[in-house]
Structures are given as C-alpha cells and as structure tokens.
Amino acid sequence: MKIKQNYLKGKSVFIVSLLVIGITILTVYLTGINYNRSLTSNLYLSLGIIATSLFLFMTYGLYKGIGLIDNFPKFRNFKRGDIMGNASPTFDTPSIDVGDGIGGLILSILLWIGMTILIIVLLIVLEAVFWFSLFIILAMLYWIFFRALKFVFSKSKDTKGDIGISAVYSLTYTVLYVGWIFGIVYLTEIMK
Image 1 (cartoon, rainbow, N blue to C red):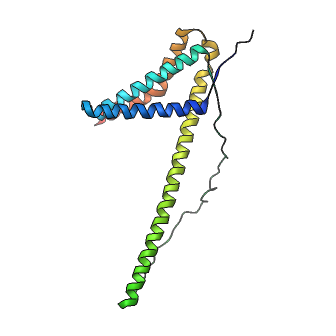
Image 2: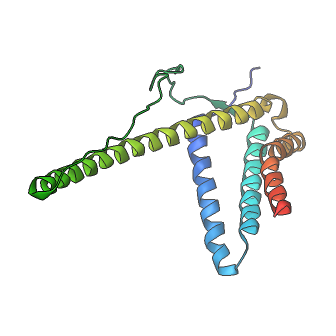
Image 3: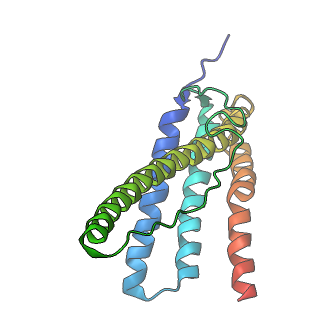
C-alpha cells in the first residue's frame, strides 16, 4: 500500500517565513523600546522566537510526512559580463570655463540644470540597481532556505508518525540553521 505524501509549495513557505521573521523582529524591537532591552537582548529574543517557530514547523512537517515542491520561477543563467560587460567606467570630469558676464551666467544656469537632470537620472539608475540587488538577494535566500527545508523534509518518509525522531531531526537542523547566528551575536558581544 502506497502512503500518500502531502506537499507544501516552496514559494508559499518562503513568503510566510519572511512575514514571520519580519513580524517577529518588528514586534520584539517595538516591545523592547518599552522595556529598555539592549539591542543584543532584542536580537537574542528574535532569534529565539524564530528558532522555536522553525523547530515547531519542522517537527510538525516531519511528523506529518510533508514534502516541499519547488514552484519558484526559473531564471536565466547569467554569465559574467552579460549585463554590464567587462569594462569598468573610467572618465574624467570636464572643467568648463563659462566666462564672465550675462553669457557666463546663462551658461552656468544651463549647466546647473543639466547636471541636476544628470544626477536625477543617475539616482534613478542607482535605485534600479538597488531593487535588482534586493531581488537577487531574496532569490538567493529563497534558494538556500528552500534547499535547506527540502533537505530536512526529505527525511519525512522515515519520520512520519514518530514524534520523537521528528523532534530529534528538527532540533538538530534548528541548531545548525540558527545556531551559527547566535554564535556570531555572542562573539560580537564578547569582542566589544
């Protein structure tokens, strides 16, 4: 008899996880203002809540035998130099002598307007690069997060119906996935 396995969509799990992390951090920091907790205490509390949520989610998923389906859109494989090429921009700023008198004044105003427009265009390009970079970072986080949970839930066929082994696997992976962040915070606190 074949046992039917339930599946969660990876994209949905990732979005819900980002929301949980964001709400947890926001709640901890907003309540931390009222209790005068330090930044490190708030970080420990946030990480503790996130680790507990991750542990409970993985334990439940392993106990129920849940798997993950990758439904994230596929991206074109980018090669080095595809977007900007291998050239780095090198240019010297020109020095313009506008002269004296009314002609120099008008030319100075036109140059000022031109430079303002150029700066606005460069800021728009910088904003586009920022949002593209943020998108790439989120895509990398999704891939890492999805691969990590997919690896954990690959054990769900072995742990289905056994809460003890599900909890052991979940605790192990929670320590691996969140423990290093605790370690970084602890080392930072020691080095102060």
